[in-house]
Length: 120
Image (cartoon, rainbow, N blue to C red; front, side, top):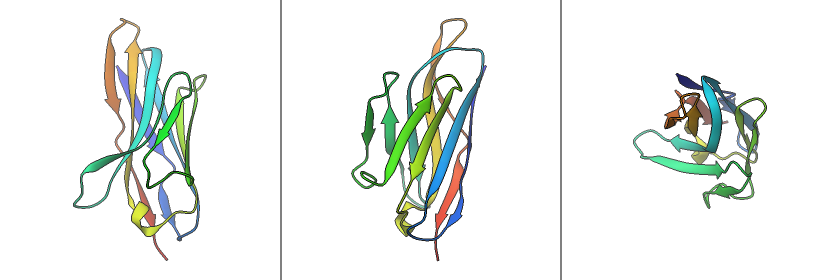
């Protein structure tokens, strides 16, 4: 069984920064692409950033130049550094990852989400 657990959310003023973390645990053989998504109240869940197993990154236009996704494969962790935060960044942030377990079965796993609120 594989679990993803996010942390690092909270309340921050406009212009501030937060760093989200997502740790994968369980019977992991390898981790492929990882990503962050977000869902604001009353809106659909949107893709924020992705990172491949080789470290290639991609970002939504709304966060380019402000957010940075990275990963530490030794720790089975993906990060999202968020700078110059805006009120419209307020949302629940979810991580997901394609994980191959020790039985060599690959699944798409999601965390439970962490709330980010940008407000003065």
